Image (cartoon, rainbow over all chains, first blue to last red):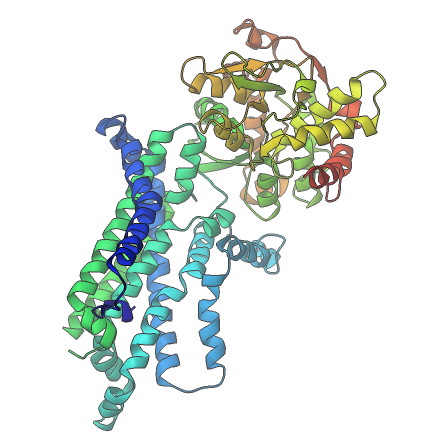
Length: 285
Length: 340
């Protein structure tokens, strides 16, 4: 992240090369990102604001929005604690299995989300390893909210830890060592030294984690069961609306997700602009 | 600053927990039924559920909530096998309910428990073409012409697609002097012309009608009418082939689930309701062929007489058809891999 923020030094390419590179990049962005984004809003609003409003206030849409917020509201704080713990362990201590842990954190990035959903079915579905036990104890994990949370957590695992590890590595352990030598306990050390140092990086990681949690489709599609009003998150609801010839409503709900993504982007850019120095260098307060 | 952020964090956690509790309890009020259905029945069951909720309220005073899930029939059966707590399954074909029965959750004799092989409505397979039928498609043998672009879903995941396949195969078999080898040759040529293999029938219909892909869609009769209704004026035409298949999408309660949840009585009442004149009329309204003739009579000309084959006559029942044609390394796998 940090390298891109340092001011670019001219490398001496000719003007045409530079223009060509910039033009290509912009054209790609325009065609593959910007135009589709505009299309979402155009489609959503093409029958007027009234239709748009009734689409996003439809009871099934509202329940999909609530479910999405609920799932993200559980998955993100859990991954936040996990991410901080993992990053702290990896950067401040030496232990066996450390490189394995670092590799495992990255696993969800390299595995297809569909597989992560299927693995949970394999473990907790009725025919799965723990299925009969769960049934006997009347616990419904798959095809219910807990399954959605688990699948979402799986795909958003790396975001916080991945953001923090390089930051904390760069900061080193000097300040912590100083605090300990002055008599700080573990909890005090974390709240007064480590956390203030990483807070902007942490926020940044949480934003990315949240954006992915709300937008995830593949993994939740496998474990959801697609029950309207109960286990349909926003991305799943959009697919259903689309399949019901209800294109305007599909794009209306999609536009809400797009707005969430845009807010995330703006917040992220604001963080980079305001605290870019801290994000890259990790200066203290 | 540090202490306030800690307090804020705690407050945040408390709010999230409270909201979670509120949301989950809110969703569990009253008696609920879950109907896991196949792809194109969305509109049908949306109406039937409303009618049954009123019917049940009048009969028992109980307020009922009916939840719906839709998807490719094979995939829906899979999720019930994997533990989706469906009280009722209303799938595209008998084999998918057989598969759930094989997992022990439905009694083996399920198809004898209700009238008409537990199939309250039927349908058939038709062609949908663009306005004016520019490719001149009249019958199954027009589909194997080189260069034609066919849309049909994947028989591995979609029930409708399996009916499509069997209808085509049955047509080929019914030609003079034809045998299984000739029929397989015909099917191979047909699937060579398929460009998009969606996972569910509705996805295929959307590909054809909304995204404008393909020259012809092989489709459920009911979904064809619905697509025609949804498309801009007169964009689509429905073609009835000389021979098609009687598609029987059956229904059943999931015994293991209704006994566990104590919903057997209402779930069985729901399925019996499907055979009443009220529900039969709704079925006809949404272009399903009702069992009661007077329900069909309300829509004269809607369900033309076509020569309809049945799976039992031509393929020796669904279990046999599934095993020979759609199982791993079955005929479909051979001709589809070989066709590419």
